[in-house]
Length: 434
Image 1 (cartoon, rainbow, N blue to C red):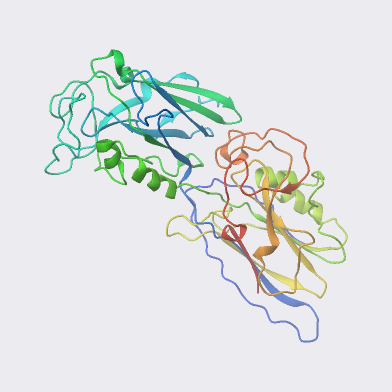
Image 2: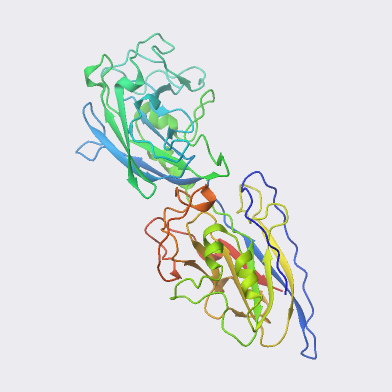
């Protein structure tokens, strides 16, 4: 038996390797035959972990002076929340924080709470000539002969109209609700200023972070660039539908898979785990929480009936990254010597979770079968760490956190679950025997 003792490496900036499959020929005499196992991350990844729209809950969707709305979201250290809402009594001005958004944690991981109004700014969308701001502004107004770049409005706009500071018009309060969940309250405080204005319905977004890099540090707009993706409808008319649809299409799942544990066994039950029992303390916890399969692999080598143990890492990146744009997902391949009666089971961490792992259900699969066996894989909760929003949890190991202990039985992760709705398992991990 053999395995490679491999550690989880940084997730971003790593090239992907497309592993090739070599089909073995079965021995006509029923002796050992050669099979090729291929495991792929086939997830069509998304850049945004969460996003949404907001509006006043009253009779009007507009947020008038003295009114407020609150948005709730999860985030890990290094992530930020961005949002945009129209300065209603303007031609095409909008409020938004600078990219990547409102900071949420101190350097030591302490959640930021309290007044964060200093992070709000006022922007000119660059598509309409600005009139004197106020209730008499015509909508949509006169179009710029050539659309301009998005620029910050500080004191006055391009036509010389005056504005008090954005933080005088909008008050932002951040509160931490525990377990990586935040609430951001946006209050219209413009009523007592020289620039009273309603706020339109808006949009908000939180980007995934991998390593130290946000997958999309500019989810809503880019200063110095022309407006795009429906922001004009929000900035000119206060309509958040188009931009909301754009960010929702970019919101979903992003996760790497850890180096994959593979075990071939005969005459025994699945030696990795049983659903409905607690973690056995044999190394599965470390795989499920940290992506480290070395301890479990070493233990399995000592189990009678286990023939071969492998820990398969993508050659250059170690982890199996998902598809990112036009870049294919990570893949690993292993040649196996298979005899009649052999069974096969695998396990790999859902990288951006607290202790979720993909694994073969029940007693694994007949190792002599050929073809796609992805339907034999399910997503399990190891029951050893408190769960948080996948990809947005401050205690998730691969987001630089320390898991919080819990003691529960191993069970299938519901879908949808209390955090999100996942794609079908076969749209995340593909397992093939040839």
